[in-house]
Length: 291
Image 1 (cartoon, one colour):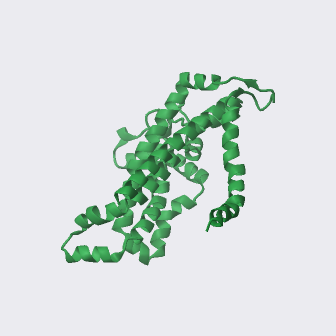
Image 2: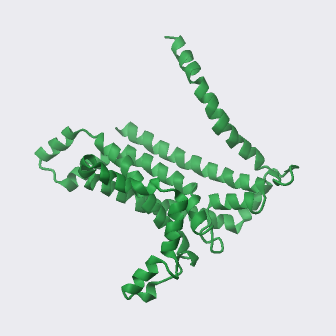
Image 3: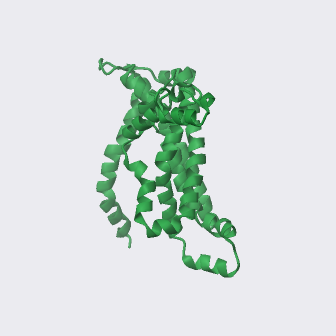
């Protein structure tokens, strides 16, 4: 019995080594690089200490990016999680019977993000896009806009595309949690005369709290590191209006050639992700303790 923990660690050692090499070391290396000022064209590095972080604290573009990431988190949680739960609960039986239904809702995630971004960019195009054409056909000419070129609309428009793409994925996660709930509980509730609404609030939602928290964590982390759709559709514009941490990090590294500054932005993203993870883990543990 005494040797079992040692044996377990020895068996896990190869996986831990791979994890340390591909995950832990790059993270540590990024934090170290953030303390330097250097360029990809000039290998010489100048130690800055906290200089990059002091500059970040004064950077108005970073503040815009943080606000936009916060907006991504709030709107993604609001417009992905409830619809995903509604779909999972409302048509769960159909999804279990017909794989084609499951495929239809999951298919947006299968399409490459670049293709999705290009398709929706054409949809939003102010001159020949389908959205403005539809509004004009309905006699709502005053509602037409340059959607991705408007500083007020660019971020919500891209978030809408993200919700369209990922809601089916989150529905599948919640559906898996629903299928893990024993049917006996629902049968007992029906015998006691509970209606659908009462069953959802008294049985489904309490038993799904842990799955919902995990799914909310995935949405939050995904909103912090979102890059592809924004870069394809707006490039962080117009005038940094849709800039987020990931696009600003990429721009600092490969457009401005400020690798140390980019590493500092990446470190900020890492800290935010860790904070979100710790919060959700604490909520999960609290839920387990109450159970």
